[in-house]
Every structure is written in structure tokens, then in C-alpha cells.
Length: 87
Image 1 (cartoon, rainbow, N blue to C red):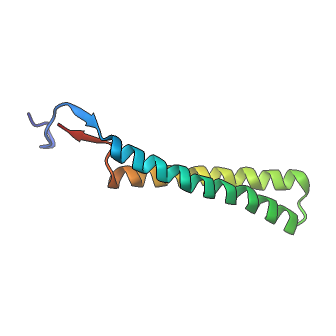
Image 2 (image 1 turned 180 degrees about the vertical axis):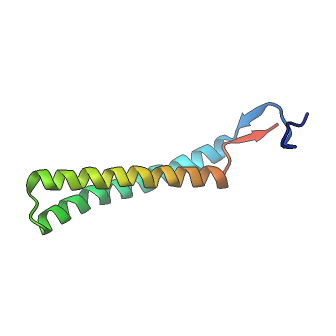
Image 3 (image 1 turned 90 degrees about the vertical axis):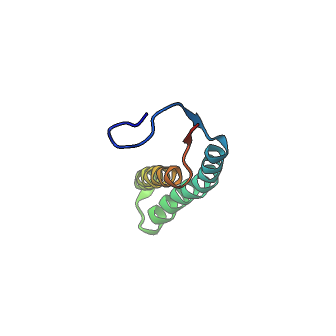
């Protein structure tokens, strides 16, 4: 059967190889992104003399930016390596 867009409908199965590939890469890259976020917050906080609370604020800001980067990475990975496939 086809739906209104002309795409076939039917059961989908999870492609575990693609899921594990994208999630493994996400774990590796997230370790680097969040490590850099905390180190960068600490470095800029000390460089500009912002004190403890300023440093924590920068770390939180960079951590939030890291979450955005990781969400974009996973979405791009899902586009390239689809998590589901038609049977």
C-alpha cells in the first residue's frame, strides 16, 4: 500500500547496526564536547577574573551549547544512517 505521499507503508524494523554506530559516535564526541565545555568555562572564567559563580555560569552556558551540538549531531546521524527500515 502507498500513503498520500507515494511512500510505501508497512511494518518497520529497527536497524541496530545503524543505531549502535550513531550512538557510539555520539558517546565519543559527547565526551569531547562536554569536556571542552567545562574546561573552556573554567579557562575563560579565570582568564576574565569572573570568580566562582561566573565560571560556573560559563560552564553551564557551554554545557547547554554542547547539548545543542550533540542533538544536531544525532539528528544528522539519523539522516545519514536511518534507525528504521521497511521490511
